[in-house]
Amino acid sequence: MYVISIAVFVAAAVALMVYGLDFGVDFTGGSILEVQFSERPATDDITAVLTNLNLPALQEIAVSPSGDRGALIRSGPLTEEEHQEVVRLLNEAFPDATMAEARFDSIGPAVGAELQRKSVTAIIILLVAVLVYIAWMFRTLSRSLSLWAMSAGTLLGLAHDIIIPMGVFAVLGHFMGVQITGIYVAAIL
Image 1: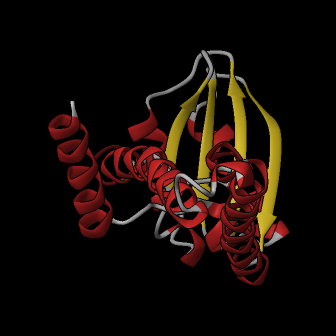
Image 2: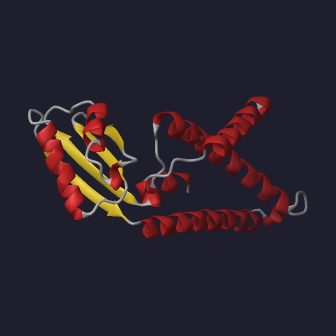
Image 3: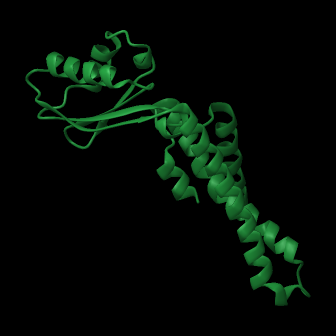
């Protein structure tokens, strides 16, 4: 089992280094528009309609299905005028599929960078807290095994359990466009 575990760990670490994580709008800044259709058009059709709008924020656009009839549209930061133009264009392009806007969020790049910094800080604080907790709870075993050895083993186990899902998300982000959001950071913590 050690060989399999180490092989999966190394593969995940390599995938993480080669592909990296595809950070979502939460971290990079941009806009998320969620719309509901009476009958959802193909995501490729929605992407084609929006890229024809020739807005700088829509140059890098990601459209993904949301539920049975919804679509999530992720783009660069949109102004309120551009947002209204996108909604108008979608209504005109798909008149038979009645569309309703479910939500619109816009996050600036400064907020995204701050969230990224705070997420890294939270992970570091968590790791230090685990070290202190292990040292405190197992202090009576210090005669048989070093507290630092127990803490290092615990952190190695945590790294194993964190790096493997991150490697999987690096592969999913590269090949399927899965993005890392604040929810993912909370799950890792």
